[in-house]
Length: 489
Ligand code: GLU
Image (cartoon, rainbow, N blue to C red):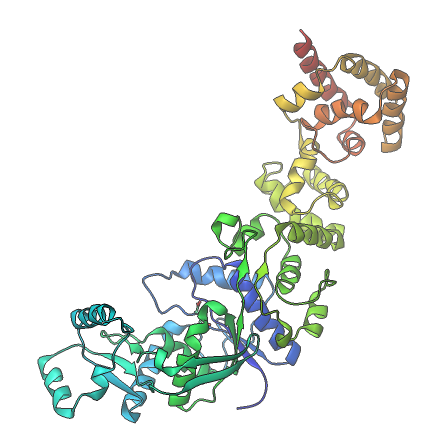
């Protein structure tokens, strides 16, 4: 085997990826890119009752969206294809036969009932309730009798009862396990289906994976897999176990904390570069590290520097970072990325007219400095795409004040005389009226936000007023004037 790093992402596809798993895949990807190694994608879809084609495609789509490109794997293919575990069952079965022939594994004929009874008894006697290794001691005659009876059997690995399994974890350091604690675990079901440990070890071996970097929820599997690698004559890979990603309550990040799937983050308008930057720093890097593009991350990432303690997912930090990445986009890029959000919010149609397109483009500089996520843009520029009903709450709060009637009347006159209609002149006209009436800018301008956008949340009102044009502006002020009168009646 060459010394080049070969790592893998091995998702069991159940729809859009969990962000914690993506952090794991990202660390594998960074480790491969930093060392000039290979990043392999293997889809662990053996449990066909659970996995759908749709879920499989969702995984590929998520990784592509995140731009975590794989060197070998589905659709890319490579020397160790197929890369879908469900298509490798024969290889797994063949390995099980080899282990049986070598004596590293044996057939176990115990029935479920027998196992249950012995478990109960062990518990009653305060012994460890694991498998007692009974079938590892069967004579040839007993085996023959069970076979003649037609008894079903599973295949179990012969685990030594004494000694320790020791390895140096890339992240958490030395891990020692007493072999006595490990049962003779099953690797093939009674229906002949290979089980997880067998499939993963055979595939990692054949794909020449030499660094297995995965979540620490899989830590207890490692001594078993090291035994299996050795039994199969594979070079044993190095293992690295990543601490979990926690929510703010210090429990593993889950649905109750809000968004967890990549699809959720995509729909909320996070950018892949921002998410990658944020996830990379979730358990790696120094306190001073903030914005780091992919090149920086690849240059600096070292798997040995991953923090051995759990990381906390801080949505506020992600939002801040995403905003920073939005500001790094060119106007054209931001326009392209935000357009689907306008469509979803009903601001534009499927294929925008040239007028709509002009508005989409005009909106971009207005939102660019003001949003942290793309899904926040629509609310700010809604008024640009057409009239918006006045929000009752905002209307009642802002348009009910005594000065609003006069403010609207005076401004309507002033705006009628603005020449030419540009932002500078519109703003000057509004400021002049505010000054004449002795109003603070905030008090004077709030009614125009509501008149133009229907609410107090919006991109700067002078820009919007300029963009929608004088007639539309005056029409909206007239409607807001009516709303204001109705409040006072
Ligand atoms: N397919 C396994 C999972 O999704 C990961 C296997 C492994 O990393 O060993 O949990």
